[in-house]
Amino acid sequence: MAPTQLEIKVKSLQRLMKEESYYIQEKKDQKELLSKLEADKDVDPYELKKQKEILEDTERLLPTLYTKIQQFKENLEEYVKSYEGEESTDLAKEVAAKADDMLASNI
Image 1: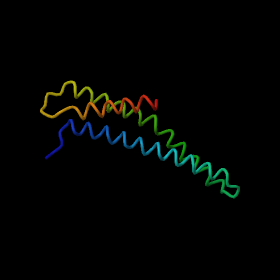
Image 2: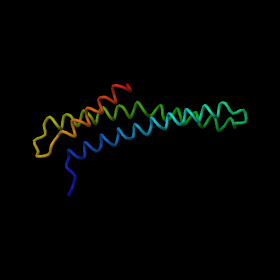
Image 3: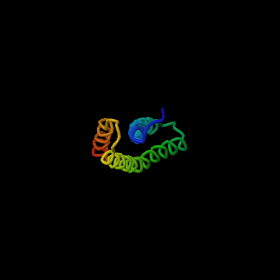
Image 4: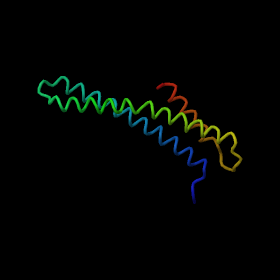
C-alpha cells in the first residue's frame, strides 16, 4: 500500500529531525577530535586544518537544516489544518510539536 500524503509529510519531518541529531553528534565528536589534535605537538598542520574545515562545514550546515525543518513543520501543520481524511493526525501534531521544541532550543 502506498504511503499517504500525511505519512510522507510526517516521515520527511522526522527524517530531518533525525538528521539534525546526527549533525549535532558529529559536531560534538569533531570538537573532541580537534581538541586532541591541538594538544598533540606532533600533529600534521594540514591534518589540523582539514579537521577544522570539517567542523566549520558542519556548523555552517546546521542553520540551513533548521530552516528546512521549520519549512517542513509549517507545511505539515498547514496540511493537518485542511486534512479531511480518515487517518488520525495525532502523530503529525506530535511530530510538529517536537520540531517546535527542537527549533526553540537550537535557534
